[in-house]
Image (cartoon, rainbow, N blue to C red; front, side):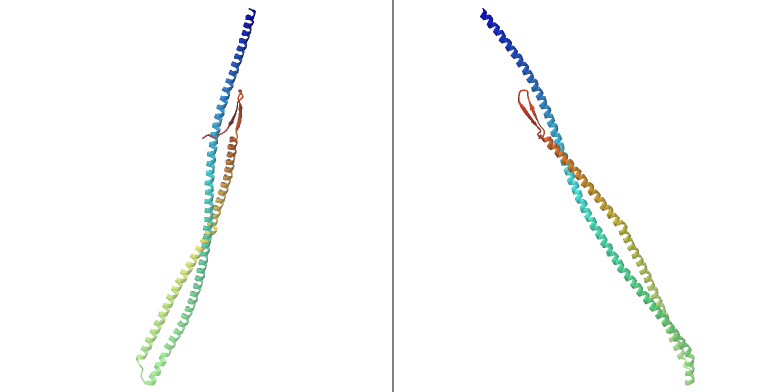
Length: 287
């Protein structure tokens, strides 16, 4: 009987120990389940953060590609502006050469017109002197002929005893013809002088017009092209500087994006479970 009671007591003690162990294990299982749930929530949160970071990385890469495309476009624009600037310089050089050529041509024409006018003036003076000289000599000759006609007529009558009636008429006709010829020569010389005066006026007018044209070309050269060239060149240089500054800023922005992407890729976190297992959480780019 005593042995039975002892065994019963031992059995009860064993059952109590088993119940305590079961309760303890139940508590441990509950704690482990709670830890597993917590770890699962942490993993889900980490996955969500990783997905968010991947999305941000994709957005940064897209932004980087966009900035690189803009840089390429601005580089193309800079090249186009440099080409346009070179073309503008060549055009200005050609314009300078053309203006110099026109100035030389106008100078040559001015010299030609000056020499021509001087020659015409000299010819007019010579013709005027010739006309005056011939006019005086013809007038003297006519006066001599008119004064000598009566004496010659008396001598003829005294020698021959009669007067030739046709001789005075012949001399008068000859004098009229000489007078008409002189008149025609004077009229022709007058017409020639008028024509020369008209040519002289035309040459002077053309010379004045050429001088005005040359002055206009010089003013156009001094005022418009130089200012236009300076404005264009200054604008191109300012735009090129602005584009270079934008390019430097965009390169810095791209570098900062690349640094952020590299920093995000280096994210790594170790998680230890209460059951003793260790997890390594790393950022990977999603497809």
